[in-house]
Image (cartoon, rainbow over all chains, first blue to last red; front, side, top):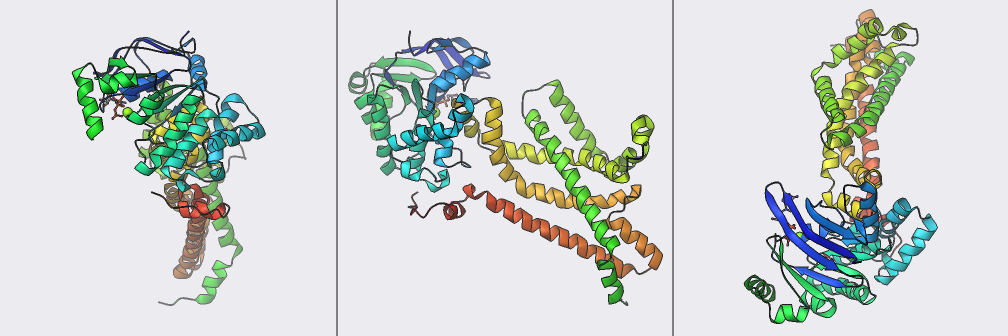
Amino acid sequence: MSMIEFSQVGKSFGAFQALTDVSLKVEAGERVVVCGPSGSGKSTLIRCVNGLERHDSGRIQVNGIELTESASALLKIRRDVGMVFQQFNLFPHLTAIENCILAPKKALGMSDADARDLARKYLDRVRILNQADKYPVQLSGGQQQRVAIARALCMNPKAMLFDEPTSALDPEMIGEVLDVMIDLAQSGMTMICVTHEMSFARRVADRVVFVDHGRIVETASPEDFFQSPKTDRAKAFIKQVLHG
Amino acid sequence: MNFNVDVFWAALSSWAFFKGALITLALAVVSHATAIAISVPMAVVIRGRPSLLRGSITAYIGFFRAAPTLLLLLFVWNALPQFIPIFRQAWFTPFLAAWIALALNEAAYQVEINRSALQAVDAGQTAAGEALGLTRFHVLRYVVLPQAARIAVAPTVNEFITLLKITSLASVISLQELMTVTQVTVARTFQFTEHYAAALIYYLAMVYALMAVQKRIEKSFSWANRAAATKDTPAIAVPVQR
Ligand SMILES: Nc1ncnc2c1ncn2[C@@H]1O[C@H](COP(=O)(O)OP(=O)(O)OP(=O)(O)O)[C@@H](O)[C@H]1O
Ligand SMILES: [Mg+2]
């Protein structure tokens, strides 16, 4: 059983077809990097995994649970899959540690003390425990994104989704977030990352999936993809990423 | 023009004026509190999918915005007891009638404030809450509402100030609020300026007190503001990055 499996998934926004015939299997422990031009459907694809966008054809299974209209299946999947967003999306009215304990307490029914212990463990792991009582507005972008990763990890997810986690960051903060992600990848976490960070892809990805116009156009190892892309569109894309 | 300061002071310090002001304030507070309690769920529903309930709420808002407040007051006080016998009993006072009329009316305005406050909370907040596996109710309760509340404070206080002044309409159903007391006294004494001035002072005092309350509430949302938030947290130096 794959951790995440898309079979011929389609998704449209009104008349606009955002995903077409997307099939993808991600095994437990696998790291997949998704890349492609702006507007190609990367966010839509990754947001379909946990039902933030609902697919309208094909099948999606996560950890053996099929993503259907069923609200309980949806909640189960979301509790198994963590997500990190481009804009961090920390809850601004809660401190770093309160951001981390909200879901374990409300969704898993954990006690406050247990949730705090867990949160401290993960805040420490992303090296931001000393800022635990700060509000998001008091933290830098890189710090906020690390808190967001800790918040997702506090649900003990079986897989993690990252949607361009470093593209809203100042260049000097990208490294601290990538380090945390690399650390996570090396610990065996199943990951799907939308990112254009080639260094990250080279270092940890098992596969690179190239998306264009809502279709998976090419799937390859990072080496093959960046050295010798097969399709013209991937070639053009890589050239642009390298020089842009 | 002659202004008799003694009359003015006597009015200002009289029990009648003080009690009138208290009734005004109490009526505004209970009406607005009720309006808020009704309008928060209404705002949540009208932001949701089309449904019979959503349609009814939209109709409610349209109706209570169109109906003049004065007419509502008169209707609740005079006409309601004719339709529904229990309102004929002694417990149905002008205060209760005004409370019902003003709350129903105010809810139609407050719902618009709530709706735009909910709208102003970034969609990424809901996405983050849902991605964590929180139920829709938990996302609303712990993620969206606390942020919407902050946005709603200023317009809600404005609305309350308007409502405080609108309570004077309840004089038509003989509620002994501040303006009724003033009118009655003026009719008896013909000393307009002194009594109007005293009433004005009460209204001004109430509104200024409210504005101070608003400041305090806004301050309590310290998380929204780096400088204020820093004050409450232990003295670890916060490097100002970005
Ligand atoms: N809610 C929506 N309603 C309508 N169209 C949408 C919606 N969300 C996305 N789209 C469209 O779907 C297409 C794919 O969007 P998506 O956000 O998945 O692209 P992306 O590959 O993540 O792009 P980027 O690199 O800019 O983040 C885009 O053309 C976008 O305009
Ligand atoms: Mg995107």
